[in-house]
Length: 209
Figure 1 (cartoon, rainbow, N blue to C red):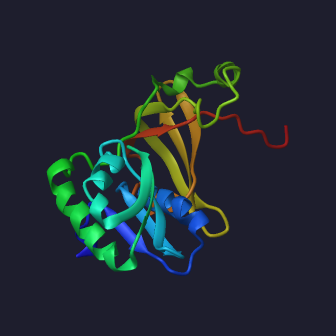
Figure 2 (cartoon, rainbow, N blue to C red):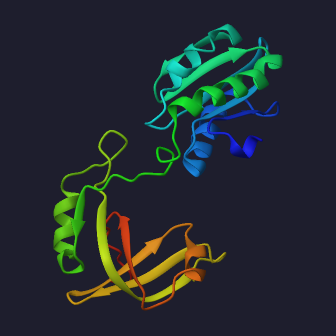
């Protein structure tokens, strides 16, 4: 069953090959699984793959080179062509190989934390000092902070579709507002008063001065 696969291989004949990599990246982010998106091309099927750190996509594709036309890449991404009739075989073989190189523990999403902080350490001045390290981008991402074991004073959905989350976090040193984009569903799962840990970046929000 495809839902049991550790490597996602999907053939979509109605997309342009230029966005296959973008779609693969989005699917990989959602499911934390190596993903290959293929589409129709002159030579059969053509596509792009995006991987996770625990899975060397290029090495695993190399083991399937008899099914592929052109292919290349590196551990985290790859591009390839193959005959459409070989798509199912590629999916099956990659998943058989994955049983030997990917464990369930390795598939648990991981987040790298740069600095643990307490609420009392978060201030406008501290955030301004961090911003001086910028600009941040792909090669130099924003630092990720962990706020551990704090009380949720209030929590609610925000946004026109109520798909975002706003919470007020509290400990003995003070309170801080937190916003989680596309995490509104958590408001149904977490009640005010419980303790939780959060990860994210620190920002200054200005409104009416």
